[in-house]
View (cartoon, rainbow, N blue to C red):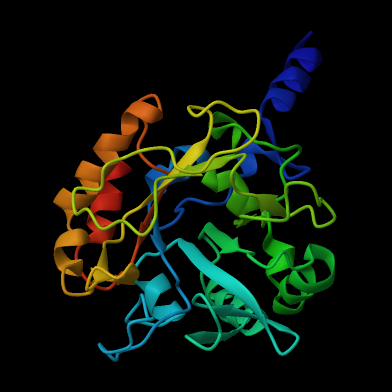
Length: 308
């Protein structure tokens, strides 16, 4: 009887993360994303600060296509744990570009991912999310996957047992870190039907977003993009908390650095989050996507949303 009890107790203490069995008593992660309190919390129940157009950084205030003032390592150093970027093909190579590569070319996706990999190597107790857009429908197998493989990110990418994953069904940050699979990769287009690269996950069956290119400083909340069989409440969600200006009323929308301090304040972010909780059974957003992450108090707001 004692042997049977011990066997059942050991079996009950085993968690499955991306196909890897991790005995709970051997968990090594004691600090996750900077906080011990987050290690036992589900990835789907954590709020992460995000950088919108993370590649598009410039110190030049006249560069209207730049949505960030600091580079990727600096963004990550400030506490950003979601990197968002838009892709385009440029001379046969996949680049991150803002609308077009003529307007703002952030370099190749492979080089970008190598920079991210350097951070992850130096910071082994961090869980990071990547949300990329694929407006040209570039091949996952032939173009995206080689960039991830060459950078080393593919080896760290989480693969769920099945998709879509309910908000409540994600593993804990501690289990993800212990398994080594601590990067979650979402693509807005192309991964819904093409599952040839299992770690590239379709975004909208698991994450809904608020509207983007917002020009109202009150950030009224609504569910803008959603897909798949899961209910709105069973999705994670992202608030696009970046304020834009319509230049001379011509429909030319650019980010607003002059008001970034107010936009990225605790009061503004918390008000936006509070306005969205009715769509998410009272839950805080999973992702708070910001322009100019080095301005304001974005991380303070995210910590409050995490109850830290």
